[in-house]
Length: 514
Ligand code: NAD
Image (tube, rainbow, N blue to C red; front, side, top):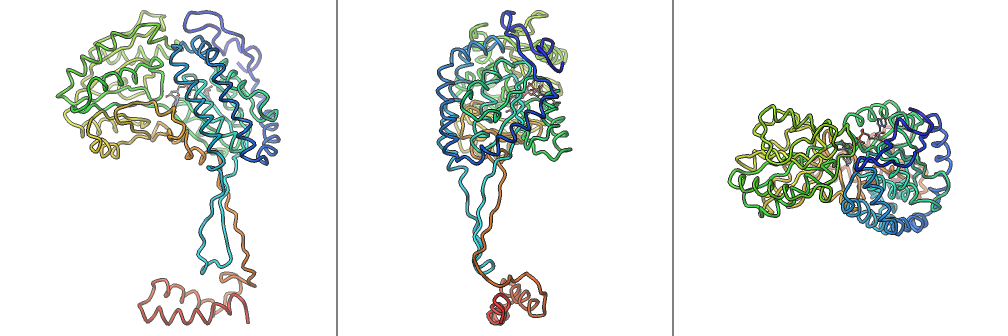
């Protein structure tokens, strides 16, 4: 599918109730270079505006988001199958805070920073680092949080002076269009452009030679995107999948741990990069913990607390992981696969005794919570670090010092103690991973290292005729160079004194002549 109505590409019916969804126009991939060229032209003017002006323009996105909260929640319910509460709590409210955070701090974050230059080695010189926009950013996003994820990049990217070509997932193009509409009339025409489509449009964005790709999605696609970008020397930020673990220690507040873990595993039907997909619980509390998690899971009301999986493809993956685990001896304690054809996958709790199964190795991205009993915190850490992923991990304990020490041993971008996953919604907290979870950073000033590049500017006001290291290379320069080495520690006390005297005589001659 390359152009036209997008009938074959975009889902036409809601995963929730099969109702018809609005038609979506696909962007022909061959139009993408034109979009990028236009964005590049407008970006030159945009980067010349002050950060304060940009902040004033973008501040109203917050009000627009909040005013359209019900519309956004209804669309997300229909297009993704999310409970309304999750849509508002995870995709509307935190993004209103996000807009506030960036518009109130961007000026400070983007300020020039001085670089100290030693006045003896570099007399008369001053340097500073300016954060320059990358230029045109290709923003390629997934379907699981189709409002929150793009906004987390769009706001800081635009504030720091970039243009953006935004490609939402082909599974949630209507949510993508809604996100773009939040900026209607605020920005110069062409600065933010929506490109609707699938992999062909994503590929076209990279081929068009954007200046940075910000990609959130699966490991498999992330790898392809990284290779394409590498061939063109385009920097790329990758936020990929996860296999998050929760580590439950025997001294934890068990009720809180059970409640937090049930939410962390089943929110958004487990279609969350930071979904809890493994629990390692210490043996002394294991049975009580498993009983409580099972009871809380049974209490979840289908259609109210939990909704449907967004795609049949995802449902098939979740079904396969569960079936393989059951065949390998995993015991289903609550839930289980739904009848063929249904997207209503119930929250499922599984007791697992060995980890050599896909359910414990690959991202499931569905509502399955495998629990494994361990003998110690050390064993839990070793097992947690045993996959290729490293997005977030939670540790549940009352001993904060122990938890802090364990956190340092985790191969994980984010660690939460007595909570899980929610910090993606905290605009000042960097969200990042290691290994197959990708190296991109979203949120907080660290995200600006992706969205901008440092430009060093040096001013030389010394007025000297020459520099030490300029031509001509003479025997006297050689003496100066070796004297410098001695003065800086290459000789004993008397040697250093002698070298200093030699320098006092030779240096002014060298720099100012005469
Ligand atoms: P996906 O990889 O299938 O698609 C992501 C995006 O890439 C879509 O817009 C898609 O059209 C586009 N795309 C596909 N092929 C492409 C290509 N060859 N070149 C350029 N673009 C291409 O992922 P998905 O199924 O939409 O999302 C689910 C995945 O996203 C899960 O693995 C989840 O863990 C991950 N995710 C990660 C984070 C995070 O912050 N780390 C957040 C949300 C989701």
